[in-house]
Image (tube, helix red, strand yellow):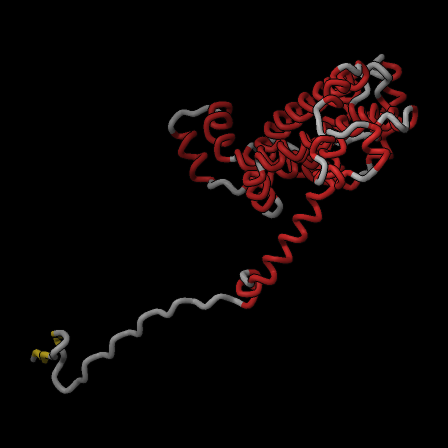
Amino acid sequence: MTVTTPDRQAAVAPGKEPAAAAPAPRPRPKGRIGRWLGSSLVQAFLVVVALVWITPLAGLFLSSLRSAQDNASGGWWTSLSSPAQLSFDNYSALLGNAGMTQAFWNTVLISVPATVLVVVIAALAAYAFAWLEFPGRDPLFLLVVALLVVPMQIGLLPVAKLFGELGLFGTIPGVVLFHVAYGLPFAIFLLRNYFAEMPKEMLEAARMDGGTEWRIFTRLVLPVGRPAIASLAIFQFLWVWNDMLVALLFADSASQPLTVELQSQIRQFGSNIDVLAPGAFLSLVVPVVVFFAFQRHFVQGVMAGSVK
């Protein structure tokens, strides 16, 4: 028996009522946190916080464009009403300062190799810990994790003595090696957790197709793990670029980076602000640019690799 309704036709068994139509799904309302974050008051507060954080950077930049006399006569905000105070003469003086320019290139020669070596070694070790079977794999990984809680200050004096015997104390390679050794435990931990989340079937299919472990690592694991690798590179680069403790101990006057040179300039020439201000801004702006250029990969990689 067929029952016909004005809206639709349906086959219904004799003596039974037609089934009621399922209600349309309602859109999920925003939670309290979502509504709170979307309010104009919170957005205005976040804008104020951002301005508070940006103000020191803007003040340092304006101070680097003013002469020593203008900086001594008033604060950097006075240049907003007197733009004639601003010029790039201080940066010309900075380029003519042999100590500052040498320190800048020393910082590059320390930061770039320390970042590249940590990323390459940690990626290889993380792949081995995540997908290769070898004796003692789990105890060795626990040892790497245990090294995360070892303070850096504990190894300063023993490593300094070792570098002195090897002829590496006071050299750029010595500073790089210390940064690499101290950065590897966290780097291996981060990348191993990210690599372990990859589907096992994907790697098994690559092996069945005849792919070697090296080919799987370079053609499959590295492209998929790009967010975690990018976040690790940012972590390592920012830490090495801004470091002063390790460089203060392991670098001599010919190999000291920009942070140590700025500290030395402040101690010796406290009124030399026409060189200190542009040097400090240069030291600050490079990590800021690197961070904002890769912030999307930074957030995605940290959130994916922090937990298993």
